[in-house]
Image (cartoon, rainbow, N blue to C red):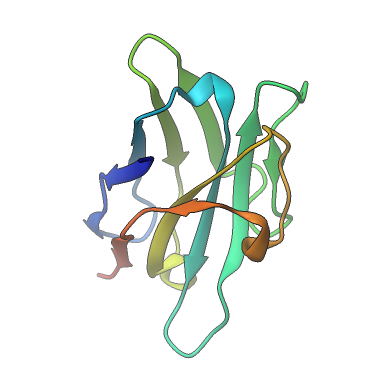
Length: 124
């Protein structure tokens, strides 16, 4: 059974940074497209970023491009989402999701596996 475990969320001040981690069990990141989504209170879940072996470049949503970097450590079997210059509107529950075959998509319904979510709160 494939499970995704997220970590790294928390409280950060505006302008601060956080790195979220997503570690799958039962499968390697090499076999998956790993995406990050977020859902703010009262809003729909939206795609943030995605990385996959089969694609040369990661996907970034326009709203976060330049402030978020997704990366993958094969040895650690972990995908990282590094976020910098965080703003109040970045407050949300961030979810890691995985898809086979490894082809990124912005469509949440296409993902086979989901983590439990990790809260990111940007507040002064």
